[in-house]
Amino acid sequence: MSDDRTSILLQEAWQRLWQYYWDDSRLRFYQWWPRQDASCPWADNWAFGAVLAATAATWQALGQPDWMHAHLAQLRQSLVEYANGRARGYASTVGVMPPGDTYYDDNAWVGLASFEMSGANEWDQVAYDVYDFLLEGFDGESGGVFWKETPKASLHVCSTGPTLLLGAQLFRRDPARIAKEPLTRMLTWLEAMRSPDGRYWDHLRPGDGLIDKTFYTYNSGTPIHAMSILEGAAPEFHFEASVQATVRALPLFLDDQGRLPDTPWFNAVLLRALQAVRTVYGLDTPLISVYRDHMAGALNHMTATRDPLSVLQQTNLKSGDVLLLRDAAAAVEILSRLVVFPL
View 1 (cartoon, rainbow, N blue to C red):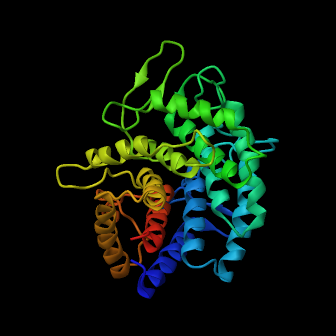
View 2 (cartoon, one colour):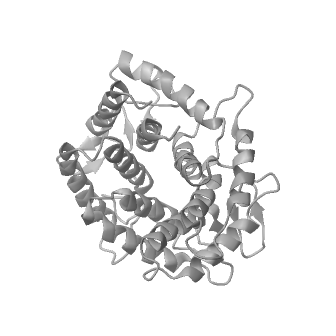
């Protein structure tokens, strides 16, 4: 998927995402499409982070084109609104009072996308600031990261994994600026959340020690992605055996028809990890062909209609369903990563 036609389709998919969800007068995104009436809310921070990641991946896949710089500047302006006057961290909502809760995982996705804006220097500080905020949710006793700022009631792989990953990216860039000890503690906590089959459970309640053993694709992605980034960055950082065990288990996510779960954004996060482990360890997985099959059908639908790109299997927009911004953004990100995925 690296030919010129696919790059043209990627540009079209990203432009449709912007066209259908972005409000240029308010510098905000809408939460879903189509918007049947004025009740459609502004996008939450989770969805905004998904758009930011899709934009970063598209920008890199297309060779950092000049025409996208204006959009990067608009995204930077839009992100400020989610701060809601806070000194650090971003709330989950924009344009409503009181603002929604502040989630550490939502902030981590923003930080990771900001890091990926390599060459767009205005985003570098965002990544560092977000990581500093995430450490406020780091539980020094256990090594996990809480899910939300208030109440700090549960430690999640979905918050610990991306916090570790962002710290790993920044540590790899400048080891003198990022402390190694929190990274090591997070690695240890995540290892305790790895199931016998190699995938990662969801979360732990410190109060009673109860573990939610639900599996989600992204929770098995961020830990191995972080390990790939940290590989060799310090004498004790060698993770190939652990990464291999998780990669071998990933086909367990496929259903009886060989399809991925209908969770596009979670799957996009996993694809980032698969790209990293292929680059660092040379590990292959049959899931890549599944992503490609899903995308082939999605592109066929997009080119035959004026709809946004979508890899959802259950959504039929003609029946009145809506396509969430985060799922539309995930489809664009998946396409961008398939464009550059090493063979």
